[in-house]
Length: 415
Image (tube, rainbow, N blue to C red; front, side):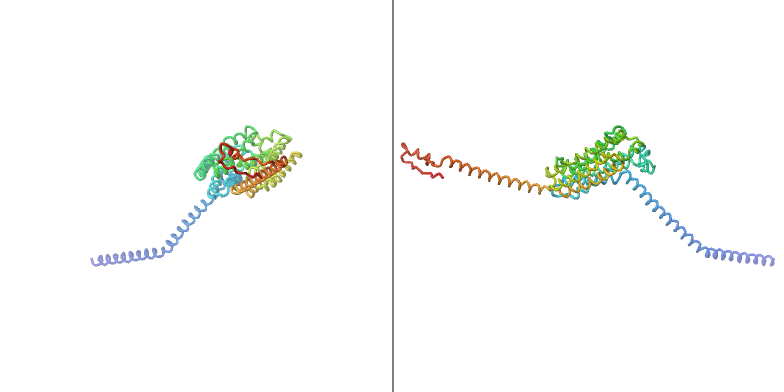
């Protein structure tokens, strides 16, 4: 009995020692595993940081991708040229003081509407662009952006630009912007695949932005405001005729009905370019005659127009791609120089008023002097005809005769 108890005590003691050792082993193992837990937590923190960095990189990459697509859809460089013509029209229509805030809103609204029109143009011409080397890498033909995405971009930016012009300038400018968007996207774009007259319709589209700027500044359309639109209209014909001649094969592959495709020799294409270049010659004189600029612009514009006309005449005489490229480069130089001349030599309303007032004063002074000379000459003629004039009796002296003998008879000494 005692042995059993001793054995049970011994077994209990051994179990107690084993359980103690087991607990000590667990505690030691848990204490030894703490560095691994710290390392695991540090690893998880590194993974979360890496994932956050990757998300940021992906966001930046995505932003760059769509920003590049929007830039190409908008034809940003062409849209900035449109903005330059609109801003020039605004300054010309502002008179003596230019509202910089309204000018900024006009330029921004014009940029947005132009971006919308160019984006819709590429949506409608996606199949044609895919066939042309010059346009096959655009966002839509290359598949970098979907058609619904491009339509959403074009619609939102077009509506925002029109609303900006309507609220910050006037409804006339907003109406011109909206009508030009419709004319470009829904008339000019499909017409490119139907008839060569699309070039002249496109020239109208290009002539409207400076008129938009003038209307935004003055809330009116006057005869003076037609100088820059007329220049843009006539300038675009030789510009696009040269481009159409240089890219005839590409336009034919794309299915566009350009004027140069029906003119194998290029004679009519060059003649149209030359004729419209000559139409630019009187615009400088009209700008001076209508009081928009000073006389120096008349001379500078004439020299500039003769230069582009000489390039067009050279292309007419020798219809080669080299001559067409030279005329194309001359047209690129013409527009910024012409607009810069308008801005440099423009006359404000105060200058026009002072000049008109000075002219009126000189005219009135000369008319007064001439009338005095006429009077002097008339008196001399009278004296020459009557050298021995007898003194006339005054009317009252006749009344001094009876029955009014009491009235005095004043004497008048005539010279």
